[in-house]
Length: 223
Ligand code: AMP
Image 1 (cartoon, rainbow, N blue to C red):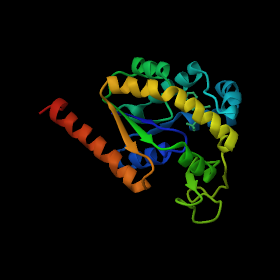
Image 2: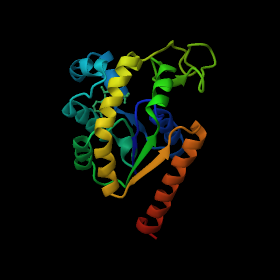
Image 3: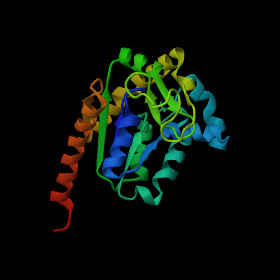
Image 4: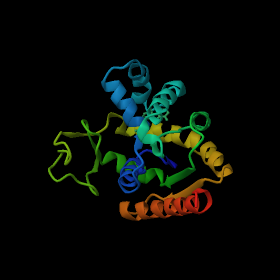
Protein backbone atom coordinates (compact mmCIF):
# COMPACT_ATOMS: atom_id res chain seq x y z
CA UNK A 1 0.00 0.00 0.00
CA UNK A 2 1.14 3.52 -0.78
CA UNK A 3 0.02 5.91 1.94
CA UNK A 4 0.27 9.59 1.09
CA UNK A 5 -0.08 12.22 3.78
CA UNK A 6 -1.25 15.62 2.65
CA UNK A 7 -1.43 18.53 5.05
CA UNK A 8 0.25 21.84 5.87
CA UNK A 9 3.57 22.02 7.70
CA UNK A 10 2.98 21.18 11.34
CA UNK A 11 -0.13 19.08 10.70
CA UNK A 12 1.51 16.05 12.28
CA UNK A 13 2.29 14.10 9.10
CA UNK A 14 5.68 13.10 10.50
CA UNK A 15 4.35 12.06 13.90
CA UNK A 16 1.47 10.08 12.41
CA UNK A 17 3.81 8.56 9.83
CA UNK A 18 6.01 7.22 12.63
CA UNK A 19 3.00 5.71 14.44
CA UNK A 20 1.69 4.12 11.24
CA UNK A 21 5.15 2.75 10.46
CA UNK A 22 5.29 1.10 13.90
CA UNK A 23 1.82 -0.41 13.62
CA UNK A 24 1.73 -1.54 9.97
CA UNK A 25 5.43 -1.96 9.16
CA UNK A 26 5.51 0.30 6.08
CA UNK A 27 8.58 2.55 6.12
CA UNK A 28 7.90 6.27 6.52
CA UNK A 29 9.65 8.39 3.92
CA UNK A 30 9.88 12.12 4.49
CA UNK A 31 11.06 14.19 1.53
CA UNK A 32 11.86 17.06 3.91
CA UNK A 33 14.05 14.85 6.14
CA UNK A 34 15.86 13.42 3.14
CA UNK A 35 16.49 16.87 1.70
CA UNK A 36 17.70 18.20 5.07
CA UNK A 37 20.10 15.28 5.29
CA UNK A 38 21.35 15.95 1.75
CA UNK A 39 21.93 19.60 2.69
CA UNK A 40 23.81 18.57 5.84
CA UNK A 41 25.99 16.11 3.92
CA UNK A 42 26.63 18.66 1.17
CA UNK A 43 25.60 16.24 -1.60
CA UNK A 44 24.99 17.70 -5.10
CA UNK A 45 21.18 17.53 -4.55
CA UNK A 46 21.57 19.09 -1.11
CA UNK A 47 23.58 22.01 -2.47
CA UNK A 48 20.95 22.68 -5.12
CA UNK A 49 18.05 22.39 -2.64
CA UNK A 50 19.46 24.49 0.19
CA UNK A 51 18.51 28.02 -0.88
CA UNK A 52 14.86 27.17 -1.70
CA UNK A 53 14.47 25.34 1.61
CA UNK A 54 15.78 28.29 3.58
CA UNK A 55 13.19 30.54 1.96
CA UNK A 56 10.37 28.05 2.52
CA UNK A 57 9.92 27.52 -1.22
CA UNK A 58 9.55 24.20 -3.00
CA UNK A 59 12.73 22.53 -4.19
CA UNK A 60 12.93 21.81 -7.91
CA UNK A 61 10.70 18.85 -8.85
CA UNK A 62 13.46 16.93 -10.65
CA UNK A 63 15.67 16.92 -7.56
CA UNK A 64 12.91 15.77 -5.21
CA UNK A 65 11.54 13.17 -7.62
CA UNK A 66 15.02 11.67 -8.01
CA UNK A 67 15.53 11.47 -4.25
CA UNK A 68 12.12 9.78 -3.75
CA UNK A 69 12.56 7.46 -6.72
CA UNK A 70 15.82 6.13 -5.36
CA UNK A 71 14.35 5.63 -1.89
CA UNK A 72 11.20 3.77 -2.95
CA UNK A 73 13.17 1.42 -5.16
CA UNK A 74 14.73 -0.09 -2.01
CA UNK A 75 13.70 -3.55 -0.83
CA UNK A 76 11.92 -2.35 2.32
CA UNK A 77 9.35 -0.49 0.15
CA UNK A 78 8.24 -3.59 -1.79
CA UNK A 79 5.02 -4.03 0.22
CA UNK A 80 4.37 -0.33 0.52
CA UNK A 81 5.47 2.89 2.15
CA UNK A 82 4.25 6.07 3.75
CA UNK A 83 5.01 9.39 2.11
CA UNK A 84 5.29 12.49 4.26
CA UNK A 85 5.72 15.71 2.26
CA UNK A 86 5.62 14.16 -1.20
CA UNK A 87 3.92 14.79 -3.61
CA UNK A 88 3.63 18.56 -3.10
CA UNK A 89 2.10 19.31 -6.51
CA UNK A 90 0.33 17.55 -9.38
CA UNK A 91 3.53 17.14 -11.39
CA UNK A 92 5.09 15.19 -8.52
CA UNK A 93 1.89 13.15 -8.07
CA UNK A 94 1.98 12.13 -11.74
CA UNK A 95 5.66 11.27 -11.52
CA UNK A 96 4.99 9.09 -8.50
CA UNK A 97 2.34 7.19 -10.40
CA UNK A 98 4.76 6.67 -13.28
CA UNK A 99 7.54 5.39 -11.04
CA UNK A 100 5.41 3.03 -9.01
CA UNK A 101 2.04 1.81 -10.26
CA UNK A 102 1.62 -1.41 -8.40
CA UNK A 103 0.42 -0.31 -4.98
CA UNK A 104 -3.10 0.39 -3.71
CA UNK A 105 -3.07 4.07 -3.03
CA UNK A 106 -4.59 6.12 -0.25
CA UNK A 107 -4.19 9.88 0.20
CA UNK A 108 -5.06 11.22 3.64
CA UNK A 109 -5.25 14.94 4.22
CA UNK A 110 -4.67 16.05 7.81
CA UNK A 111 -6.59 19.29 7.86
CA UNK A 112 -6.07 22.24 10.23
CA UNK A 113 -6.28 26.02 10.30
CA UNK A 114 -3.33 28.31 9.62
CA UNK A 115 -3.59 29.71 13.17
CA UNK A 116 -2.98 26.26 14.64
CA UNK A 117 -0.09 25.72 12.22
CA UNK A 118 1.63 28.88 13.51
CA UNK A 119 1.15 27.90 17.15
CA UNK A 120 2.40 24.39 16.58
CA UNK A 121 5.46 25.17 14.50
CA UNK A 122 6.64 27.81 16.96
CA UNK A 123 6.59 25.11 19.65
CA UNK A 124 8.21 22.36 17.58
CA UNK A 125 11.64 21.01 18.40
CA UNK A 126 13.52 18.41 16.41
CA UNK A 127 16.55 16.27 17.07
CA UNK A 128 19.31 17.34 14.72
CA UNK A 129 20.72 13.82 14.82
CA UNK A 130 17.80 11.34 14.41
CA UNK A 131 15.00 13.71 13.32
CA UNK A 132 12.65 12.80 16.21
CA UNK A 133 9.93 15.43 16.65
CA UNK A 134 8.86 17.00 19.95
CA UNK A 135 6.54 19.80 21.00
CA UNK A 136 7.04 22.13 23.96
CA UNK A 137 3.44 21.53 25.12
CA UNK A 138 2.05 18.23 23.92
CA UNK A 139 5.05 15.99 23.30
CA UNK A 140 7.78 17.08 25.66
CA UNK A 141 11.11 15.24 25.89
CA UNK A 142 11.91 13.55 29.22
CA UNK A 143 14.91 15.82 29.70
CA UNK A 144 14.65 19.48 28.66
CA UNK A 145 15.85 20.03 25.07
CA UNK A 146 17.46 16.56 24.87
CA UNK A 147 16.28 13.80 22.52
CA UNK A 148 14.82 10.75 24.35
CA UNK A 149 16.05 8.46 21.60
CA UNK A 150 19.65 9.46 20.93
CA UNK A 151 20.40 12.01 23.69
CA UNK A 152 21.39 14.71 21.21
CA UNK A 153 20.36 18.35 21.61
CA UNK A 154 16.94 19.42 20.28
CA UNK A 155 16.71 22.52 18.11
CA UNK A 156 14.13 24.72 16.37
CA UNK A 157 14.09 24.05 12.64
CA UNK A 158 15.49 26.97 10.70
CA UNK A 159 12.39 27.09 8.50
CA UNK A 160 10.06 27.20 11.53
CA UNK A 161 10.71 30.94 11.89
CA UNK A 162 7.47 33.00 11.46
CA UNK A 163 8.38 34.63 8.12
CA UNK A 164 9.39 31.28 6.61
CA UNK A 165 6.28 29.56 7.99
CA UNK A 166 4.21 32.19 6.21
CA UNK A 167 5.88 31.39 2.90
CA UNK A 168 5.56 27.64 3.42
CA UNK A 169 1.84 28.05 4.10
CA UNK A 170 1.40 30.25 1.04
CA UNK A 171 3.07 27.58 -1.12
CA UNK A 172 0.97 24.88 0.53
CA UNK A 173 -2.33 26.62 -0.20
CA UNK A 174 -1.29 27.32 -3.77
CA UNK A 175 -0.89 23.60 -4.48
CA UNK A 176 -3.44 22.05 -2.13
CA UNK A 177 -6.58 22.25 -4.22
CA UNK A 178 -4.99 20.71 -7.30
CA UNK A 179 -3.67 17.79 -5.30
CA UNK A 180 -6.95 17.23 -3.49
CA UNK A 181 -8.81 17.20 -6.85
CA UNK A 182 -6.24 14.82 -8.26
CA UNK A 183 -6.74 12.24 -5.51
CA UNK A 184 -10.50 12.81 -5.28
CA UNK A 185 -10.80 11.97 -8.96
CA UNK A 186 -8.98 8.73 -8.24
CA UNK A 187 -11.38 8.04 -5.35
CA UNK A 188 -8.55 7.53 -2.89
CA UNK A 189 -8.84 10.80 -0.97
CA UNK A 190 -9.75 11.04 2.73
CA UNK A 191 -9.78 14.09 4.96
CA UNK A 192 -9.40 14.00 8.72
CA UNK A 193 -9.49 16.62 11.46
CA UNK A 194 -5.89 17.49 12.35
CA UNK A 195 -6.82 19.60 15.37
CA UNK A 196 -7.72 16.57 17.47
CA UNK A 197 -5.29 14.88 19.88
CA UNK A 198 -2.47 12.76 18.40
CA UNK A 199 -4.10 9.49 19.56
CA UNK A 200 -7.50 10.44 18.09
CA UNK A 201 -5.96 11.35 14.72
CA UNK A 202 -4.01 8.10 14.75
CA UNK A 203 -7.19 6.16 15.39
CA UNK A 204 -8.97 7.95 12.48
CA UNK A 205 -6.08 7.08 10.15
CA UNK A 206 -6.03 3.45 11.30
CA UNK A 207 -9.71 3.00 10.57
CA UNK A 208 -9.20 4.26 7.01
CA UNK A 209 -6.21 1.96 6.50
CA UNK A 210 -7.88 -1.07 8.10
CA UNK A 211 -10.86 -0.73 5.77
CA UNK A 212 -8.54 -0.49 2.76
CA UNK A 213 -6.51 -3.49 3.89
CA UNK A 214 -9.63 -5.60 4.56
CA UNK A 215 -11.05 -4.73 1.16
CA UNK A 216 -7.74 -5.70 -0.44
CA UNK A 217 -7.84 -9.08 1.31
CA UNK A 218 -11.47 -9.69 0.20
CA UNK A 219 -11.03 -8.60 -3.40
CA UNK A 220 -7.46 -9.34 -4.39
CA UNK A 221 -5.81 -11.90 -2.15
CA UNK A 222 -5.67 -15.48 -3.45
CA UNK A 223 -8.14 -17.84 -1.70
P1 AMP B 1 8.93 19.55 5.18
O1 AMP B 1 9.86 18.95 6.20
O2 AMP B 1 8.08 18.53 4.50
O3 AMP B 1 8.14 20.70 5.74
O4 AMP B 1 9.87 20.14 4.03
C1 AMP B 1 10.83 21.14 4.31
C2 AMP B 1 11.22 21.81 3.00
O5 AMP B 1 11.80 20.85 2.12
C3 AMP B 1 10.08 22.43 2.22
O6 AMP B 1 9.75 23.75 2.67
C4 AMP B 1 10.66 22.45 0.81
O7 AMP B 1 11.60 23.48 0.65
C5 AMP B 1 11.42 21.12 0.78
N1 AMP B 1 10.57 20.00 0.31
C6 AMP B 1 10.17 18.91 1.02
N2 AMP B 1 9.43 18.08 0.28
C7 AMP B 1 9.34 18.66 -0.95
C8 AMP B 1 8.69 18.30 -2.15
N3 AMP B 1 7.95 17.17 -2.27
N4 AMP B 1 8.82 19.13 -3.22
C9 AMP B 1 9.54 20.28 -3.15
N5 AMP B 1 10.17 20.67 -2.02
C10 AMP B 1 10.08 19.88 -0.93
